[in-house]
Image (cartoon, rainbow, N blue to C red; front, side, top):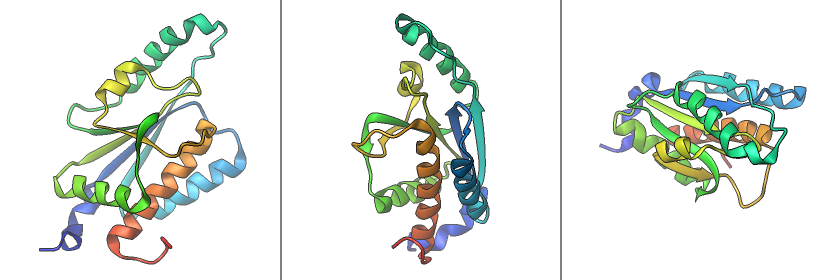
Length: 168
């Protein structure tokens, strides 16, 4: 059976996006909300915003990342498949990303958790929990942009999997 015939499972897929900091820019909020709305037929998507801790002393970065990491991990279930967005992560094309989501669904993974760190990165404890460390690009983006790009790519992945137009 071709995997596209197993799409009845999609209704059960849960996607959680854990992100540090609030999106302040109206244009980014609107774009993210638009893709979250478009995703509703494909998956139940939950966005969890964790307040980023302001760093006043560069020597405290590791301690702050550790505190943020504990908060992030408190929102992750043991059986969840965790994908962290990291500079040194693996780069995937949109098609490879779609195949990965399809593979996880076919493996009966019920929840995929994406973690977007702060501008200082992701805590080693969260990175170590990741099943997949993914990089969006060799370029550096504001971490607020990462949420918009990620939601668009998740939407694109479902369109690719379903064989629906949009993706080109």
